[in-house]
Structures are given as structure tokens and as C-alpha cells.
Amino acid sequence: MTTHHRLVTPTRTVEDLSASQLERFQRHLSLNGFGVEAQLSLLDARVLVIGVGGLGAPILTYLAAAGVGTIDVVDHDVVDRSNLHRQVIHSEHVIGESKASHAAEVMRGLHPEIVIHEHHEPISAANALTLVADCDVVVDGSDNFATRYVVSDACEIAEKPLISGSILRFAGQVSLFWSRPRLPGWDDGPGPTYRDLYPEAPDPGEVPTCAEAGVLGVLPGVVGTLMATETIKLIAGIGRTLLGRVLVYDALTATFREMALTRDPDREPVTTIGADVAAPDEPHESDETDTQEDAMRINPFTGDPFAHDEVTPREAATALRDGRASGVLDVREGWEHSMGHLDGAQNLPLSEIRRGLPEIPGLAEATEEKPLYVHCKAGVRSREAVDTILRAHPEAPLRSIIGPYTEVQDAL
Image (tube, rainbow, N blue to C red; front, side, top):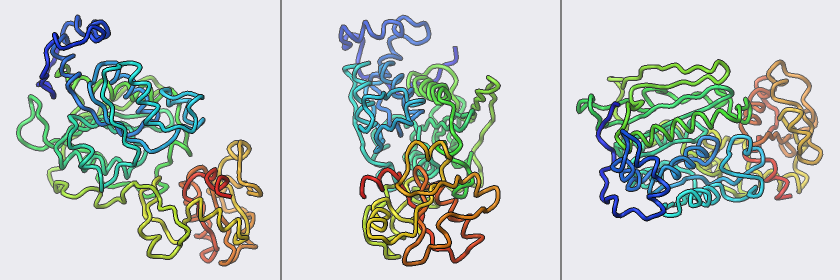
């Protein structure tokens, strides 16, 4: 069995384990090639996990069950019914509750002695270094490019190992990034990071989100479990890591393939976090809409600053309530519209807008004083729809609602 230096050198002995821990981890303790020392390393390790979604569900479940002693969880979202087909750490009875808090409850049920730090905020350039500072390894299960670059940059600066994974439709990938790896076979030179795999972030709308393109529910279970496995191997010092390799899984063909990854020798080391991507922060909830404030607000789904024609759900609700809107255009698919929509909203799916610009309901009546408000589930598709319409009608008075349309309903 291939082994490497343990990432965490245990400070305790087997005598320090409680009776319940000895019973709980007995299959690890008796596992040839793992044993007591590896288990003690897990118990002394601290892992930062970004996201309690489809990937975070198996990651957190298996890390807690395996005996990782301290886990930091970062997620500011709440459980939605549409999450449940893949985010199996959650269930119907906790819809509307904090993902981080419910995940912590589940993890304590698997390992009552675990220490959990809940962070109910997005990770951003402002807090990333603080969050990664005290952790031994970072595991990124986020679902947007801006967050991935921020996490990668913080890990490169702090020289922390990063297990990163992503999923879309029927495929996913996993790798280990580490700017200063402490592993046999690596010299003192730097290792590859996320920026060596993806030097530049894609343009907004270039890569569809899971909300738009969909994702096979079981897929994050496979990819997230692989991420948890790599985390355990790295901490315990067993096996061959994925440093310098990207593992790609295709669920439709039931195949794995591997790509080699090396650091770009011409790439300058990262010294600032997210210098070329906006911090993935919450949009500023305000009824003020002046240009200066818009430039300071951040779209949490793309990581880009708010454009002049983007509004928060609260702003949209205020305009609708005050009669300052010509109408509402819902660019979700028909089946989504039928599940719920804003009162009076006309449905024209983005997929139809892409195929060729049809007549846009409400556009003829729209004015700058009463623009047409466009919404989807979160704001990514509405942004693309507005951009597509503007290419054909550059002066069209449109507003893209950035955030869940349900928040507009709540504010009305």
C-alpha cells in the first residue's frame, strides 16, 4: 500500500479515546494499513468544508462518521425542497432551516465528540484567509466559479491543501490542489492549484448552472464521497493522492478518466485573493439604486458586481407594489413556472429566447419609468435573458431580478 507523511501528527494516544469512540471506529482500528495512528490523526485534524449542498452532504457525513475531530462548515443558505434530490444530509422536515446548522446536527449524531464551527456567511476575499488559517485541509464543495477562485487563492497564500470537486448534468471531477505540497516525490517547488487547471474564469452565462442545466441526483454522492476519501487519505497518510491529477467521472458511461495537471511555470504566484473575480458575497439589500451603490453590490450567483439594470428582490417588490413596473417576465421553463410564480408574470423560457427572439410579453408597454422586470429562480438566467433581448432591442427598459423570486413574493 502506498503511504505518505501524515498531514496531521496525532497528539493523543489510543488511551485517550472514549469507550464509544473505540467501539465506533473499531473497523478503522483493525484495518491493516490504517489502524490506530491514522485514526488518531483524523481525530486531531481540523477540516474546513465550503458548502452544504450536493457535494457537501456526503463530504460532511463521511468525514464526521470517519472521526475527523473538528469541522468548520461554511454555508449561509437554507434548505429548499429542490435541494433534496441530491443534498441527502437534509430532509423534508428542515425545509427553510439553515443548512449549516442542520448538517451540524446530523454530524453530531454520527460522532457526538466532534467539534463543529458553523459559519453562516459566504466565503469571500474579506474572510477567506481567516477561515482557512487554523484548518489542516480545505474541502471545496461550492457551486460557482467566483467562490472556487477565492478559496483556491486563499489556500495558495496560506499553503493549505485543497480538495476540490465540481458537478454538472451527468459528470463531475475531483482533484487535490496544493501550492506547497509536503509529500514524498515532490521537491521544494510549488504544486498545481485551481488556477493552473482554469487560468481564467468563464464569462457569465458561458457555463450553465446546475439550476439551469440540471444534475443527476446521485452524481454529487459519487463525487462528494471521492472528495471525502481523498481528505481522509491525505490526513491519515495512506494511499496515493490526486495531487497533479484530475479525476473525471461520467455517470452515463460508468467510466473514470484521469488527466495530468502540472503548475504553469509562467504563472505568477497568487498574492491577493480573487483579484480578477468579484467576491461571492450577498447582495446588499437596500431600496437605494444609485449607480455608486450598484457598483459596490455583488451578485452572489456569478460573483460579478451588480449592473445598473439589476435589482434585488426587495427593490423589485417595491417597484411592483408602487406600480412602477410594466410587467414581469418569467424566463424559467414551463414546468418551473407551473410550480409557482409571481402574480401576473408571463412565462417565456430562456431556451426559447435563445433559439430566436420571439415577441417578448410586456416589452412594448415598458418605459424607463415602468420597466419590464425579468426573473428566474435566482438571477442567472434572467441576466442572460436581459442581455439577449438587449442585443436586439438596445434601448429596452429591462430589470433583472438577482435573487429568488420567492423573496419578491415575501416582500410584497
